[in-house]
Length: 177
Image (cartoon, rainbow, N blue to C red; front, side, top):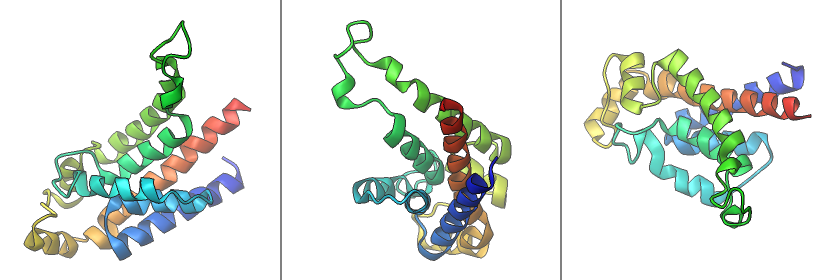
């Protein structure tokens, strides 16, 4: 990995970590860090990702919001577009357009599973804190914070998601050259 990529990845990690600690809402904090590193601002993606926070609406049983942000990040670059559907008679559903995106998502998925054992919010909580927290409940949120949720735990998950997304994208782009 080149020094430039390492610096970008570190910046993404640091920003995502800080934003999660300051603001919460893992999905938005991670995408904001990625957008900042790449000089982008898409407020619609930022807004939409808010619904993925803490496993989806703070329910915990869905995918990690930081992971979801990585998926969105890759999808905005390599996902199938609406106008692709029906254009190619050999691939009318434009299924081939998913190829690069799915390769990148698989790499991010594998990094999450390797480090955290899962991409599911509650399972990541179990790995980090020994139990899941129901963040929608103010008492549970307080316990989450006391356990380190916004000090070292989910802040680190956000940092990892942003860092890994940069590394995966940059590796992919360098291989494409």
